[in-house]
Image (cartoon, rainbow, N blue to C red; front, top):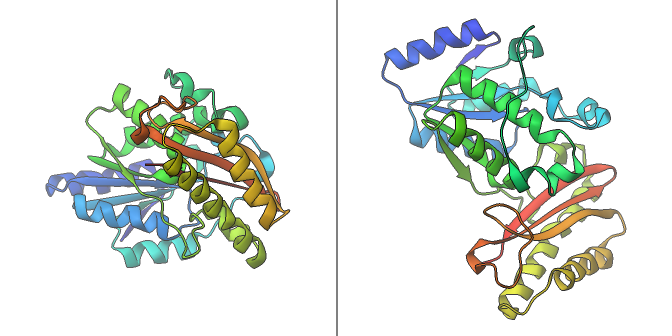
Amino acid sequence: MIVTTTVAELSVALNEARRSGHSIGFVPTMGALHNGHLSLVRDSKVRSLFTVVSIFVNPKQFNNSEDLKNYPRTIDSDLKLLSEAGCELVFLPNEDEIYPVGFNSYIELELGNLNRVMEAQFRPGHFEGVVSVVYRLFELIQPDFAFFGEKDYQQLLVVKALARKFFPQITIVPIPTVRQSNGLALSSRNKRLTKEAAQEAAEIFVALSKVRDHMLASGRQWSQSAVYSIFEKHLKSRTHQLTIEYFLIADQRDLSPATPDTPPDELRAFTAVYIDNIRLIDNMKIF
């Protein structure tokens, strides 16, 4: 496995891969890797001959300085996991390599509703930072495929919009959320949870499942207020540590609030929840 830290080293390695006729798969990460990230790598290994993983904690997508400061950094174990997974190249840049002096990090991209709801609403500037770093990484790596997890579903839609406008040659591949046996969605932030908090956080999945079961049984006879009540009631009945930041049934095509007239196949539940001052997000397809 090749480990590069500069754009120059990255370019040399990629040019050699292309000369060998290899298709390139790309998995962008912020490190603190878990089996969810490795599922992206495994899919890349199936679809492409040369897999690149970037590890860069992007300061521009954090609207909370404490969140940035506390974000887990586990480079040594990350590299070990990637080597064992068969990754061909790791790009491990510092901030100056991603955002050199004179680089204009603002990318004009009309996101419409995607930049007004949920993550965009509660993390101002977050998606501007995501667009900046993904644009830069796509520009540098020029992959054939790029892999993103559905846990960060809103981010996935943002990246698809970015690719459509600027990188139509890149195929964006969504990968289903990977969960622990108790249903908790894998997240780098889970590393900060105590054992007790991790057990309680699993109730997010249970509550989402109860909402899905209610909607499946109700057909088109459901309302946002009723399903919010089901979600909230379950969490409050199981723990007092979880605080709901948002919960919404949305049309998964553009994340507009869903109604009973929304096509059932497009319904998806989204939530962000705090536990011990750690923010966790999750989502679940209804039908």
